[in-house]
Image (tube, rainbow, N blue to C red):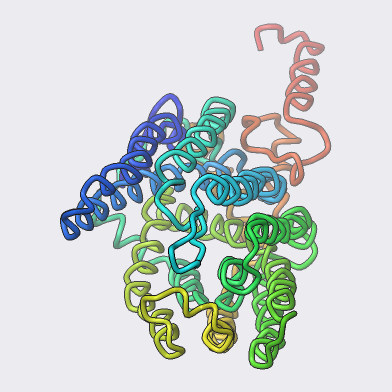
Length: 471
């Protein structure tokens, strides 16, 4: 509700990129220092930690929502959005890749120690990095975020007079009427564990390979698996469509998880490396969804505006998050149950036992196969094609022009009828003929070759040539 009702000179999302870093950094330092001061009072320590952590989740949630959704309103042109998501995802994935490489390395270098029993406790598994290393990394990353806050502009197909005000009940009810919200949410929930078998790289480094360099190296390599998919996603989207890519990659991940299952069941000294390689390939296959998933969400948001006249990125995205979290509370018992089944209760040293470690991975792989299949089913009913979505966007532009008095009601109705009939170029043709509109209502990739400015200049020059200088 906060985000959807924000109307400032910086737009709807960028204010949160400006102000949220302050409480986020405070919480990051607090979570590393304050609970540690209360170790003599365990329950108090636990309560204080939980409160700080929940505050951190709230502030980070607002920041993340604003950051990810801003990408979907930098341009109303769907083709541009997909290219921005692909290129942008590749660039900003370097951040997590560097963090995942640097923080474990520094943490292990500074804080690793050996117990009297001879067991080594890796520094990244101690509280030390959370006092200094992680908060400092957070400061650096959030500082880079100000480039986004002040270097972009929000553009949506809305009237210039449009000021949104959505109350909580209405936001929830209207979101619940969006069928694509339910399809996307159910797919997300059912597919929660589709990559479960690939989530043990850190464990394999710590308890199977047991080398200081392993975690930094292999986590970084796993991070690089996402790059090809993010770069190529716009090309694949243009050729195959977002829905088809999501379905195909889900099935591909299921197929690739099958050998991971069998490798885990017949382990030897090379098994951790085989699992990491298979996990890399699965991550590579799934990486296309790092672009297609947020891209298909734009269809959900635009459909909401098409049906109700309101943009509800905040309500829709957070309703997805709330439902996912509610179901996630129940699903959070699944992994501990798998751990307990194989003998891992509270002593992590048992993970050095191959029977325990690979037993957990094998069972998780089975769970991933089932989850991947179930998560695919709702997407089979997603019926917004790329062309249909383009027509929806163009219709929103026509409505905005009509609300601003730039296009009369009769013309707007005619254009809408053509667009809903599948004539995606109706508005572009009208602008080419008349020079009416604004640059935000044409897209570079979907519009005619001539830019709006060139069309407008041509019209003005022709009027002046006729002697109507007052025009």
